[in-house]
Each structure stands twice: as structure tokens, then as C-alpha cells.
Length: 100
Length: 131
Image (cartoon, rainbow over all chains, first blue to last red):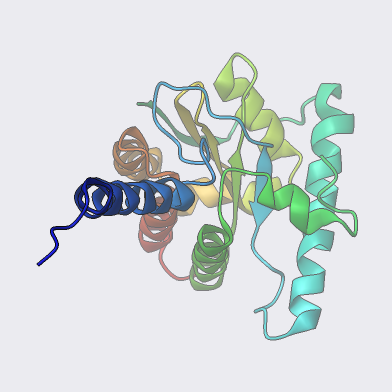
């Protein structure tokens, strides 16, 4: 029998493992294609602020979905324009605070 | 921040949550509103100093502040504020709010914003009971 050439040996024992490594590495990095979306306490977290109210009625169809942004609009615009207006009397608000 | 425009959906998707998380939040908010008759609202974003004052300012801009409960979360400042209106406060004493805040902060310190907000809302709604 003619022995396999050095080139074939290298291909089988180096080329194939290398190809496997490359494929697996590619898969790993393809999965985390959206870096920085995850919140980690203590690290800066970039995002646009959001303010949610619940939908006025249960979202049963397109109508409910369309109503959602409308319900948010007043609060969202108010947050920018009326930010410096006199704060209404809120002496009797309650609640709690916490840090982490 | 023009989430009210027709191009509102992408603006919301730039926020801290994925679509799946947004759906969970929406469910939690709707459930809390329906079961208590109060108006719950969630703000996630930076708060000006002092955070308490800023959260109260946001709360006063809601449609019906007296019956509203605002949960304001600032991930970067690592601050959480729960503001209850005059009417809501009778149903949700500050002690119950503090309990919910503690469990929310525990989730947040583990990096789980959505889970913390969802469980906090459920807890608040639970304490407030039925109307």
C-alpha cells in the first residue's frame, strides 16, 4: 500500500480540527450579535428612556395595539415640555425608595 | 423621544427591553391595573437629582396622579423609586411599597430588570387588593 502523503496527513489531523474550531467559534459569536443590550449593574447601560402605561383595554387586535402609543403620548411629551412647570401639590404622595 | 409618532415602535425597541420582555411588562401592567383599579405606570430611564423629587414630578404629570402608582427605575444610577398618589396610598401603605422595592432591587442587582419590574408590579397589585 502506498502510504498517505504528508499533505494528506496534515489535512486530516490539522485541517479538520481547525475547521471544527472555526465553525464552533463562529457559532458562539454569531449568537451574541447584539452586545451591550444586557444590563449589568455597575456598567454603563445605553438605552432610550421608556415610560409605560397599560393599554386602555385588553389588546385583542390591531385596534388595541394602535391605541397603545396614543396612550403613552401625553405622558411622554409632557415629560419633555412640562418638565419645569410648577409641580402640582404632591405633598401627600407616598411610596418607597431603594438602591442596589 | 417621540414614541407617540407613527414610528413609535422602533423608538420603544431602542429601550432597554426586547420584544418578549415588553410583552411580559405589558401583561404585568394590564393585570395590575385590572385587578386593583389603580393606574400603574413604569418609567425606566435616568432620573435627575434628587431622584425622589424627579420621580414625584413624573408622577404628577400622569393623567390621574391621585390614583396612580409610578415605578421609576434608573439602571445607571441604580435607583428605584415607587411613588403612590393620595388615593393609591390608602390602598398601598408605604411599608408594602418598601417590601416590593426590596424584592425589585434584589432582582435588579442580579441584572434582571424585567423580572424585577414584573414581580414588583405583581406584589404591589397583590398588596393593593381588589377595589
